[in-house]
Amino acid sequence: MDAAGFVRSLEQAGFGPFTGVPCSVFTPLIDHLGTLAPDRHYVCTSEGEAMGLAGGFALAGRNPVVYMQNDGLGNAVNPLSSLQLLYRLKALLLVSWRGEPGQKDAPQHRVMGARLTGLLEQLAVPYIVLEPGADALEQALEKARAHGAAQSTPFALIVRKGYFAPGAAPAAVAAGDPGLAPRLDYIRLLAAAAAPGDILLGATGFSGRELQQYTEHPGRFYMMGSMGCLPALGLGLADSHPGRAVFVLDGDGALLMKLGSLATIGRRRPANLVHLLFDNQAYESTGGQPTLAAGVDFCALARACGYPAQESVASPEAFRALLGSLSGRPRPLFVHVRVRCGTPAGLPRPEQPPERMRDDLMAFLG
Ligand SMILES: Cc1ncc(C[n+]2csc(CCOP(=O)(O)OP(=O)(O)O)c2C)c(N)n1
Image 1 (cartoon, rainbow, N blue to C red):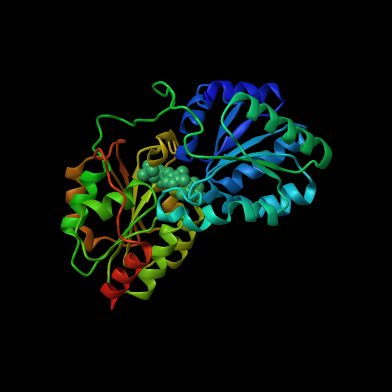
Image 2: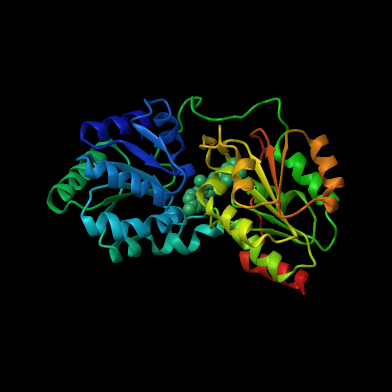
């Protein structure tokens, strides 16, 4: 399906504006939405927030569209149940079907992939699995429109991998500043400088995959999925292992999704935690869609939340110097690293199953 034609069909059927959080299934769609006026497409930070925004549009008599990965449906369940379904507010949900049973996909999609339709049924959100073609879309939109008119509650279109035809060179892709170094340059420096007993935690997105694939540090752990949860996971480990330094390798999309963890860490102030934010201003691993990071002063946020020290770094040389002086710095230390998009071609997904990664880390921790 051509993304521009898809948006045209939805808008002609009275749906809009659009908001949501990316999944690679929607890359051509979001690239196209990025070319529209900002009041037709709102970039936002989490699926739950997107449902709040949709609630406002629905109260204003509009028919908002929220796109999300099925993993992100978890974030949307709370407002769905106590906003949209409670107040009976319309929303058209576009939910990707990662981990569809019988299809090959990354492990983090297995549980939700198998439960997606059952979860929507439990929530009493009717759905259609979109079949290819304009006629199937027209019929689905007619059902969604009729449901909204009769029930005034959300309706979901489940979108499979490959539904959207790849677009031309995306106008909205945030490649970042080409004068900056890529994230992997920093991850390699960190892994080489870390003591053997340190813990290195990589977030969902490319920081975790690069850490897992391109370093050998025995204390590394890749948290695939559970986007935004890594700083809190790091705090749990840091407080349980005060003798080890814990490095949290975060992404800007992930941190923005659960910004509250800055306050949780800032209150507890673990003296062994270093929070590294690799800020490429993009959801790079789902196709490079822009995040809202541009213009956000992350060091000021960390300071305001109680981190006693913050650093901004924009070159591997400065990072190397910082690593050399870590022991003398107050912690938790927040390090804002400006990076450009870019990861080695063919970055593979880890072959170890998640349980194996858990076992490896727990064995390392003793
Ligand atoms: C709750 C939830 N929503 C959406 C996704 C899909 N997703 C996986 S990685 C990612 C982008 C993460 O962006 P960022 O933290 O900036 O890291 P980068 O991809 O740039 O490495 C998204 C949107 C997800 N896994 N979970």
